Image 1 (cartoon, rainbow, N blue to C red):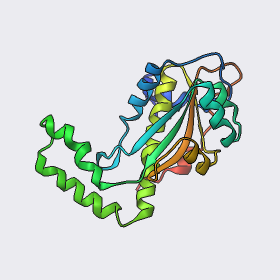
Image 2 (image 1 turned 180 degrees about the vertical axis):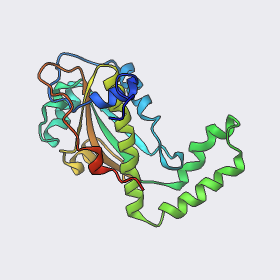
Image 3 (image 1 turned 135 degrees about the horizontal axis):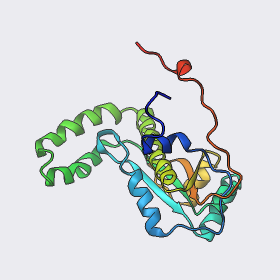
Image 4 (image 1 turned 120 degrees about the vertical axis):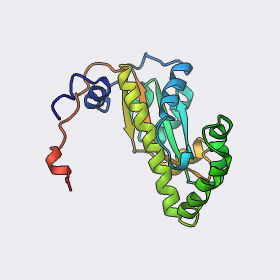
Length: 211
């Protein structure tokens, strides 16, 4: 780490100390307001053209966990963590942009005439390209999930991102829309003893090219 960063910046220290949680306290819960607060942080992450093309399904009751667990490899985090989010990305759709930008126009931040300057290039970029629309859904959902993970860490909570699940079954069981992609599961809760510290990463010199 570059000299001067560690130990002096709480955000960076939070990121550098986060690791995937394996063991949760199954008796600990999060209130609905705490879950909403985590998602509010998640929705502050960046999205292309301000589409905000995501949705978060908070699986936090015993009954809902019982529905999710068997279609997600019966991973312990789903039943033990306070909540597991089904993080959904929505296929990029330029048609939503006027509605998503409306609050900026109403607040006087963005001129109304500028909305089409965003909508038209977004339409040209995505709408004739199914793979690009799906790629953007995955990108958006991942940004949101990452923000939730770091917010959870800053609050002393553990988190576990998971891709081990039957996407079609999750889609059906939890009523996802045709335009929605279940990108990952993200468990969040109170940790118990036995979790590892963050595993060592590859050296920066191996992954960075300065040009």
